[in-house]
Length: 489
Image (cartoon, rainbow, N blue to C red):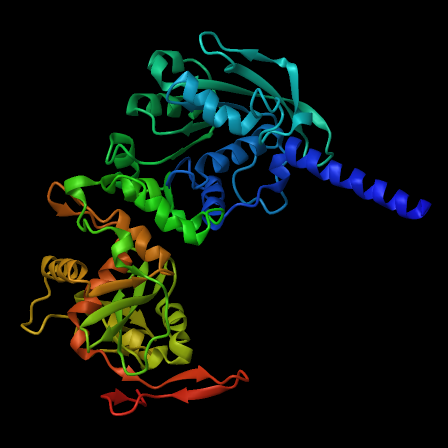
């Protein structure tokens, strides 16, 4: 009995220790979702980052985790983002003093009721004596010093400094300091944003923003979307990316928002207004992935990566209902045609090479191959892609981008063009596909271009021989009967 009692006491003690760690070392339990991880990773290569996210999708939690790492130096072993090996200086900012206290400060430090040290910054890294309160807003801190630890020795090597700021006090209150990093929680005015950039210019530091884009195509949003720069990166996190929200609750949450705000609040999509090319909501064109019936016609739509990423979109056409489905997307940067082909061939049980491929007019451009200049389309043929004989065009010979967009629009409206839910990169492009001064912005549109090119050439789509699996896992040939099929490519 004594041993059993001792075991129970030991277990009780261990459980209490786990609860204490969960309360006072929240950062140890942070497991970023893929979109949050992508946002963190981009810090190594981009001075400015923007995380678009819907309400309650985890954007502030993501920003708070990163701030905690930079303040303490306690980076996880699998951290691939920006690191500092010394104490840092940074600002955390919100719209008002109250919203800064209630959102980023709460995430970082905890609440007054729960106790300071119950946020993302571990309690053992804080000292109440090294925290000063701000004036004018109850319980809002002005400056907080945080223990920083040397990565090699694990010993404290100094104090990092964090200050809380708000936009309402104006740009003048943002002048003077030199910073390593700056976190904007919620969208700042442009003058506040650019003043923040001035604060990091001397240190080679960085800024990052996390917000739900309810202000639409504001000047800050346009800076990221329209002003191309290797210094800037955007990540969009939707309600589908927020794994803490049960799948069965998502529709109910989305339906609870005003209709004109649903895309912004649920999927982090800026309300682009008249500048957005497709006004149809994502929810109305998204379908869960399903096995493609064997008699459906298949076609690749390609957009060559000559001065932008290569894109391949696999379309499945249900001719009975005249509905086209975007079922798979491939987008690759800094890769060669051989690699593009290798990514396409395994699709559909290894039948990717049997599926016809529609391609754009620039496929006639000549590139070096085997010591000769050959049309780009021929190079893909040599690598086993079943390229159509001619570049994609409509039956009347036209290949206008605007006509292609019009057909996509009509199909969206008529429920004749659907997209598999797994095609997240396709939706990333769809959200920002827009016009500026009446012209289509030709950036981050590769998969949408591949879709349009495939639709132009849909009459060449074929049902093909592909492989399925028996119950024991062995391969079996899957081929439709009594259909127009090209079984041998």
